[in-house]
Amino acid sequence: VETMSKLPWEGFGPGTDKGDTRALPAIWTEQAKFKEGADKFQAEATKLSAAAKTGNLDAVKTAFGAVGQSCKACHDAYRKD
Image (cartoon, rainbow, N blue to C red; front, top):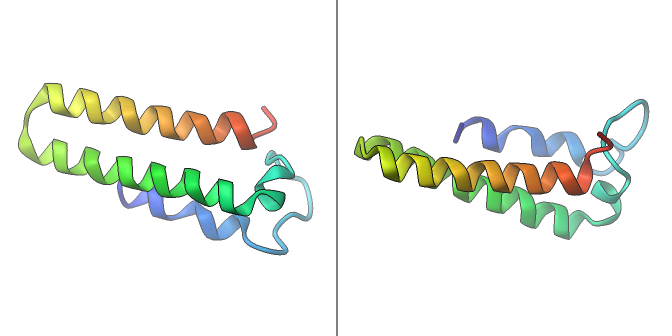
């Protein structure tokens, strides 16, 4: 999850707003806000990775919930469906 959290952001840079996309135009008009969401998701994914290494199931559950919330927040704000 931590590795994948770093992958999709280049796909939303300048000039990528063309063609058939499920992304809302706000991704490109609100780049700073979108980047904040991406940074938060990546930070939460890093915390999940650290929690997983502890072997503590409660810590993993907490960190996983935070990852899910940060992922969902971005999808809610920037995805058409």
